[in-house]
Structures are given as C-alpha cells and as structure tokens.
Amino acid sequence: MTDRPLVIVALLIGLIVLLVVVAMRRGLLSSRVAAVPAPPARVSLRRPRASRPPRGLYRAVRRLARLRFRLRPAPDQDRLTAPLIISDQHLDLPEPGLGAGALVGCTGHSAWFRGGCTPREPAAGLVVRGAVLRGLSHAVDGTVGQDASGALWHQRSGSLYLAVADGVGSLPDSARAAYTAVRSVLQEAPARPGHVNLAEHAPQLFARVGQAVSGSLPGGETGAPTGATTLLLAEIRPVLGGALAVVCGVGDSEAWLLDGDGWRPIHHERDGGGEENSTRQLPRHPEPKTYSFEVASGSVVLLATDGFAGAIGTRRSPLARELQHRWTSVPTPLEFVTHVDFVDEYWIDDRTAVAVWVR
Image (cartoon, rainbow, N blue to C red; front, side, top):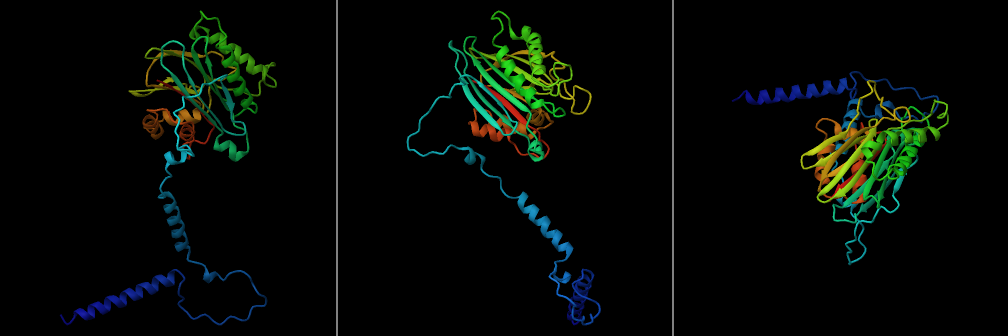
C-alpha cells in the first residue's frame, strides 16, 4: 500500500513528459531557447507563422465542418412544395386541361407543364406532369441545354400524345434538333389517317420527322447535319378500367411503366451502340422500335431522357424506390419538379421526365 502513491506520481510524470514530447514534435514548444531577433529592417504585414494553428488541427477542423454539413437534416420537402394558402376558403379545383398542348425546351432555362385529359365516353382519366431541367453540366459550362418535351391531347381520337427528345451533346445544334423533333412528331402523329394505328405508321412517321430535323439544321440537306437527337413518342388512349398505349423510340431515352408490381422498362436502348455515350439518333437512324401494351388503372407511364431515366434503371436504384412510394398519388406540379430535380453528384446532365397517371 505504501508504494501506491509513488506509482501514481510516476505515471503523472510520465504523462507530462509524453505531452511535452508531443508538443515539441508539433512545433508548439521548442527544445532550445531562441535568440532575441534583431529589429527588422522593415515592417511586415504578414502574420507570424507561429500564430497559425497546427496543420493537423486545421485539417481536423475542416473534416468536422464537412461532417456537420452532411449531418444537417434535410429540409421538409412537403413543406417546401405545399401551396401558399391565403384564404380560409378551400376550393377543390379540377385538374386544368392541356388545352392546345405543351412544347418546352431547356436551352437557357428549365420549364414544366401540367394538365388533365377527360375523354368523352366513360373511360379512365389521365393526369400529366412534365418537366425539362437544364443540367448542371451545361449550367456550369455556360452551354445550352439540349432536351425538349411536349404533350398534346387529341380530342377527336381521344388520345394523349407525349414526346421527349435528347440532343446529342457532341454536335452544336442538337438543341434545335431535339425541339424540332418533338414539335414535328406531335404535329404528324395525330394527323395520320384514322384507320391506321400508330404501331403500323411509326416507320413512316419517324422518317418524316427525321427529314424535318435535317431540314432545320445547317448542313442537314447536304448529308452532314450539325445536330442530332433521340426521340420517344407515346400514344395513350384511355379506356374503361385503364388505357391502351403505344410507344415508339429511337435512342437511349426511355419509357417505363410503374404499376402494382413495381417498375418495368418498355423502351430501353441503353448501351446499345457498343461505345460509351453512343446512341441511335435522328436523322441518321429513323427506324423506331415499337411497343404496344395495356395500362391498368392506378398505373403511371413515364417517358424520360437518360439524365433522369438512367438513375431509375440502375440496380437497386434509390430514386426508383422513392418514386414508387411517392407516385402512388398524383404529385402537385412543384412536387413533380422537385422529384425530377433530385440531388445526386453523378447525374448532372439535362433531365426530362413526362409522367401520366391513369386513374
């Protein structure tokens, strides 16, 4: 028992010596007495080096700051996208119709559209949400976005037409090509003879759209167009209990169906060119792939460019899981925009998504 105080004292002395050694190695103490420096010849405004914090401490503080930023709770998205209520009266307004349709691009900005479609005969109703967002890569570089999208409700045939296009980034006029392709296909598809279904008419339709794209581009008529684009078209005709759909596409823009069984790809040409970032495109490849299928009530049909669809198609996609939960009901237009504008460090290209809820 008499040796216990001596052991404690020895441990304390050893701890003090260890702290002194560590301090000396980090430059906090010096092992020798510094000579008194001579008065400087001129005054320096630079802070003495000894007053700076040790480099290891500085790095630790930076790591801690980054950690605190990552652990900061995410904002309440429902609160951010909820409408501003300025009256005690609440009006349950119906979904506004598409009217003359919508045609938007993202050359210098982002855009969105919405609308409902009500057929004359008893059938399922359709609700449309669309967004075209200029990608972070284009915004940082100061270049134009190259996606385009549109929707059109054709009352005479009782069909909804949707289109998305993704301009090929390696060509300078691809934004114009994408916009022209969407505008042309939405004009040509409903104008076909009534007895001809879209699946049969698709090769002729895409050939004419390809010609329109070539004619709108410098050098297009000489065989060396300065722009190119993917193109995806969907015709959705509501019927009792659901809808009948036809999808035609060229390139890596994609169509998906979300129903009770989860996500199912409809049009999917990803990595089909054999080279990185290569894809079939108009006007060079006017031969579309065509799909016909039934859509049950309560399902969602999605058309999207690869900047959005690529994140859904990845294995164990967190975006696909989140949207499967959130899209059980029709989101508000602003909610839909926030869904398309998801945050991820990898997906920085333009994003276009058009979704239709069959109710």
